[in-house]
Length: 280
Image (tube, rainbow, N blue to C red; front, side, top):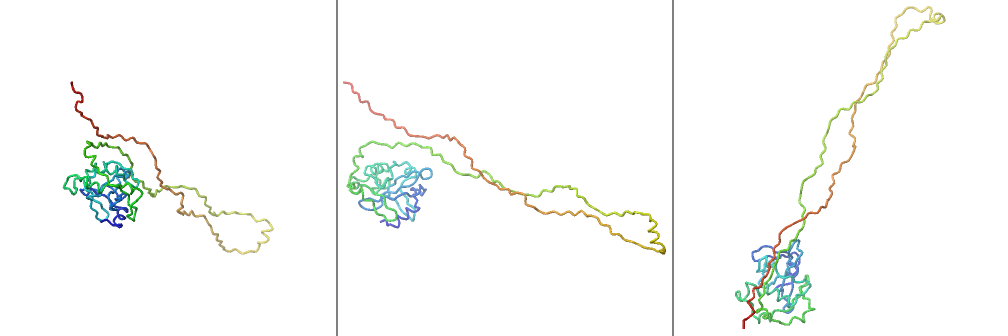
């Protein structure tokens, strides 16, 4: 028996793996059988970036933590018939899916590899509703259509599934290189002319006139000394660091068109019918 906690856990990050343990994709929704209320189907997100959802029967599946292991291969699940994910699976959609997966249990059903009997199908097939997230309650709007309907009428049909490859092209970001800003010191010689001043001594002789001689008459001879202080400008060199500009490294995104060419394969089905014309 499944419980609500298990269903809630699968909705929140559960994954589906194939019979070999290889991851198929993330769990999309868990669908419950309208009559029994038991989980009957799980959708798994496949395709590029999980853009598609494939239905997988839970008959024969095992659940451990958030991992659902189904008794099918990854390719089987990805190639399953597409059913619109609209909250319910109709009887016709279930028939188509069961036919693809080889019966109720595929190759590992309860009848040791034989298809499920008409009685088993009649008692179990019906509309299947999606489980509400976190509650496990079925959507009962289509429950009236859940009357048992066998799939035995398909046993006599000769049918095959045709598959083809589809090309999905996407983009991913890859590192192409690194850009680095680096600053270093460059020494250059700067020559400037600076005016400097200095004092020099110049001797000036001025003859005395008659009044000056009368004023200075009678002076004794003596020795005298006079000092004059000379000054000059000295060149002083000083340097200071001054910010001059700011350099920033920016990146621009450039979009360009690239054409991708690849081969895709598809299956063709030919009919080989016996001659219907009889000679009378």
